[in-house]
Length: 280
Image (cartoon, rainbow, N blue to C red; front, side):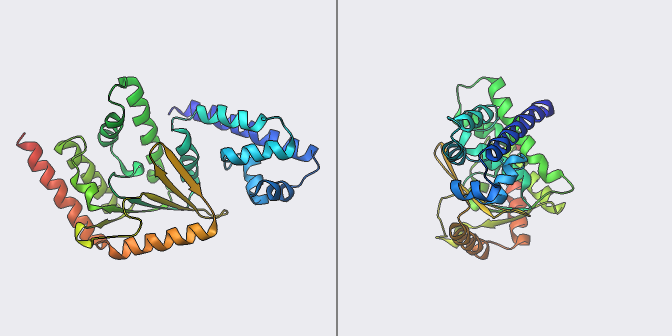
């Protein structure tokens, strides 16, 4: 995603926030008043108005109902989300990644997007879009790589990924791509940019089997959980749900290999793929 495109989209969200503030004040409501009526905190309303956070669709719809704006904020939301390089159900989660102070991913079958290589990302995207044009595929790859830049930033969040061993063993893109992907994860670990553990096959049954999860913590907002199914996603910040998800994630980490043993396994799998690639 080009910086210019991001800048124009950010300016559009700032317009959303300015208009929200104007309509709210015209209605004689404080941020706390409006937040109570649309079931979010007053602090959230303030962050929407400053374009720090983006509301979800149902919140935009409730704002329209309370402020009697005839669908204005829903229309703005749909227009802005349409301009995102991500699917509609993931766009808000991608925005929150940039604001998070800590991100914990669990991946049961696919390397999480934030630590994918371009070659691995391309193979995953092509698997789901076999008739797509090269231009479309490369646009999605670029968007994914742009997301991953946050792990290179000096103010990057703490990033902790737990990968099921399946993620290491499915040869996405072939041996050469997998060797590069696992080698990249090992490099990030050696550089102390990420923490990665592997949940081995030998661990057997595990919490929330087969389901991905992403936990995000923020400096001045409640923690959030993102989960994903087929062509749909859920962004949840109910404290009870977040606590249960965190407990499940803690159990996953407890059952996983240590950081050192995980690195050893990742590097061994990468070497196996390199040998396989050299013989083909």
